[in-house]
Amino acid sequence: MISKKMVDAINAQIQAELYSAYLYLSMSADCEAKNLKGFASWLKIQYQEETSHAMKLIAYLQERGGGVELRTIDAPPTCFKSHMEIFEQVLAHEKHVTALINTLYEQAVDAKDFATQIFLQWFVNEQVEEVATASAILERIKMLGDKGSAILYLDKELGKRGA
Image (tube, rainbow, N blue to C red; front, side, top):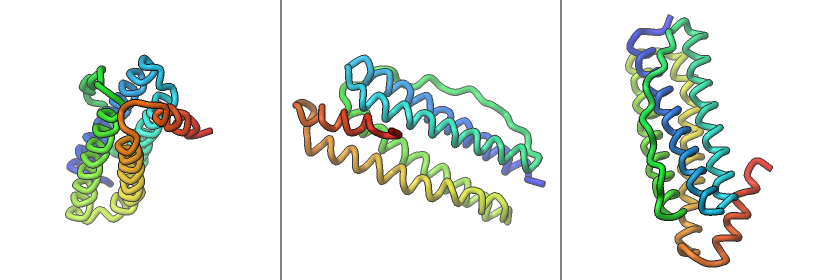
């Protein structure tokens, strides 16, 4: 049986993952409105990933006999100055989520909840990938600047994600 404290912590992480999904969907809509369809597509796939992370956490709680408590999700920002600002926020947000996952893992260690530690290892590894990917895209945007045909090339490349 999973402890009430761990259930509460995982429910908080579910909320954080769903907020992440909302944030990326909002960013996708902003890019779509600016005719950056590749950026929009990449962010929409990111939205789907974050939703799947929440579902993975929900399934885990259900498997362990913990109660799922869906909490209010704050509205994300809806307007962004540029694709550079978006990816600066993506990177900052992924670093924030990494800190949340690390804290959750630490709670599982402190509780000697070995099953949850093993389960959370996937999320720890996933966050390494998420931060590295966001960082790489942001660095490419910085090299290209905010304007120009090179951004259209990057837009096209990002649109290939999941293809």
